[in-house]
Length: 109
Image: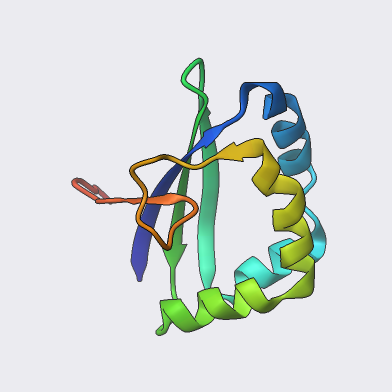
């Protein structure tokens, strides 16, 4: 099992829309998340900085393949098309990232 933490900005004028979208995530999107071996997935909002922090546990054996599977899914692509305009990627993210990866520095179970 791998844990992942990521961060991205949230456009201030899109906060209410983002919360509304995530209060009723499309069932097909939730099913794809599960099909891609992701468990305990959460997104947190820090205001007034308007930062989104996501945490997930990956329970599969090939993270890159599962992420490619998710990215190829038409319903997930539709979901991203409505969510991404709400987000503001960090300038410090890696070239191939939308959400910036974070280093885990502590975990206690």
